Image (tube, rainbow, N blue to C red; front, side, top):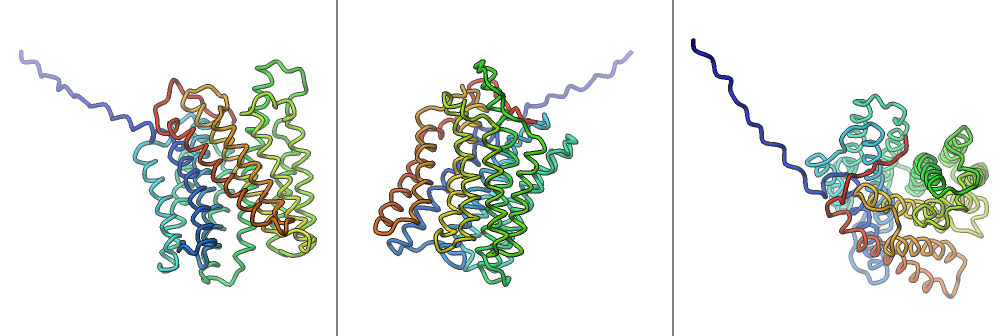
Length: 410
């Protein structure tokens, strides 16, 4: 009796990606840190020394776009895809898909850099491709896991994408809108995202640390209806700014939002976290949200006393950059299996960026010392991001040390 032989199938295991492509936080946080330096140094060199710089209608608009949508976009992508893997329990975006996403971010930077020579439609497609790709990946992961609660995060990122397109079109005279108003609205939308994410991670991380250290004090207030009111106040400020950019209603609404977010920050009990820098810097970074909202509202009500450009830097250099540093540093350590302790590099980077923001805000009140203070603020900004890249470059590029930990926020 002849027995039919069973074919033997030998399948080669899929090659593991290089550690750099194992998680979105690695390439995207690294890209954010590099652009934070390039977009400032290049723009300052063009203004001070006449060196040719990329343009988006003007060099100033290029600088503004890259600091908000380029730097901010990379940081948003790094956090979002890292958090989604924890929210859904699905494998993180890695390998070729992550390479393609990073490439789309680089293409967006080139599209904006050569926007004065490219047709508007080509610039828009190249510039918005990264955000569209990011949204598609996030949507795929959340739908696959039926995690519909976190769709609100994607909705805010979709708004940022819309404002990115409108800002580009306005700068290149494609639409008859004021780029400055779109720019301010986009910044507030990113602050809304920071408020949404920060309202979940900051009290959660603080509570975990306080419980671990057995600190006998009231625990941070977790996300509740008051937090929704705080987020709603930013939305109301955005709507008011769109409808009447220079009206008193916009100013008062933004100042009210600042007051509410200050109360929100106090409820998170950050005063007890001074012993642990990696926790304290989350609270210190978020300080710039109420401060920036209040200053922006004040600049609308009393423009003769406060320039809106200085107020906006409290939200960009302060809230955005400081929160990016705090989250990126924590993610780089936690997701590569390292101890969650802020070392010299992260502490130095955060302190320099935080103090740089203080100088950048107060420089508007200086007269004879304006150039000196602005130069010092710029050098501190560059030094802060260099400290981050030097201290965390090897962490982002190298292998994990042990089993990684997710972002413990649902």
